View 1 (cartoon, rainbow, N blue to C red):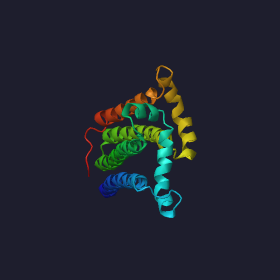
View 2: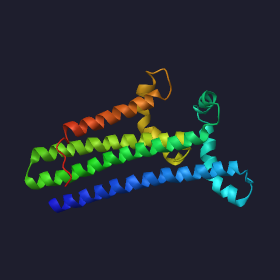
View 3: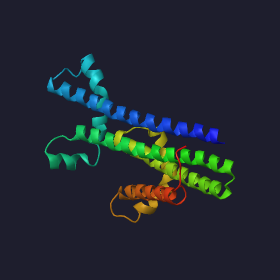
View 4: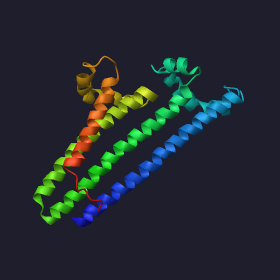
Length: 214
């Protein structure tokens, strides 16, 4: 049992380290793409040239979708310049942070599974039940937060369109509970995210409070 728990713990460590570097790489890649777009404008490169076309196409796609956002024109009027590039960069940073947080819940669930096997090997029935219940609840929160992240990615970047319908069908009833009671659209999405995050934290605090990194 302890050997199996060790393997699961190693997997959790690998996921944590890999996600940290992966999301950092995504932020750097988006920054480079946006920088190439800015340089193409500064040097007034021919947009129909091969170099300018292929280096600016990814950024143009992201910027074009960002300009259709409801936040674009209010920010443009407030700042006095086109904020699309900044919006893409900060949206990427926020998204990577959100994804890293969700992966953190997955890691906690893996550590809980590892601890479940340790408790099982020690004959601690109460501890096993507590960890099983905590793991299941945490994975449910992970699933809901993942669905909300899919919706967030689609609304910001226009990606994952094939998954959005599935995500809305699963998370839609919960969103409607909050959206119907609030005057501002989108505020219910934020509140539901905070509620799910709070529940996940409460599960860790009450059921997985003695979680050990084996």
